[in-house]
Length: 139
Image 1 (tube, rainbow, N blue to C red):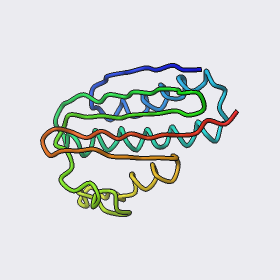
Image 2 (image 1 turned 30 degrees about the vertical axis):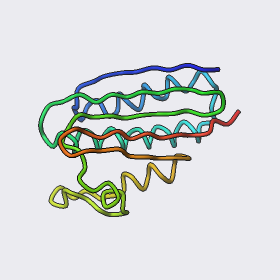
Image 3 (image 1 turned 180 degrees about the horizontal axis):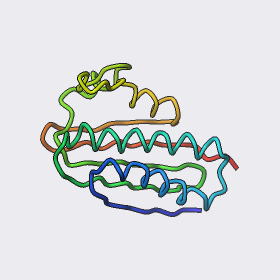
Image 4 (image 1 turned 90 degrees about the horizontal axis):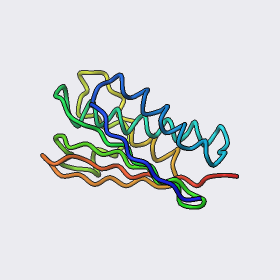
């Protein structure tokens, strides 16, 4: 089965839970295991939270959630048009946070990498960030 969707929503903390529900509903069509759904939900939650907290840092903006099922895998993208990341490699280091005053743990990218089969981040300061994740789907 091949299918895709795209959803745009405001960069509000309330929409992080909404994004988890949307990705769960999208994945249901391929009858994934609960473990797969839980792992994808967590990764999407982390990516959306990063877009809201770090991408827009208290300003308004839009987050785009895209998902595609390509035979035996899901490809998920979370994109923002916010401030971007100057040093992606540094940002992806475990426990790195650009907001230590907010008691952020700095494990968002680490969680995404541990739950997904592939994670890539493309970003440019002033232009936003695109997080692309892949996950094999179990029958």
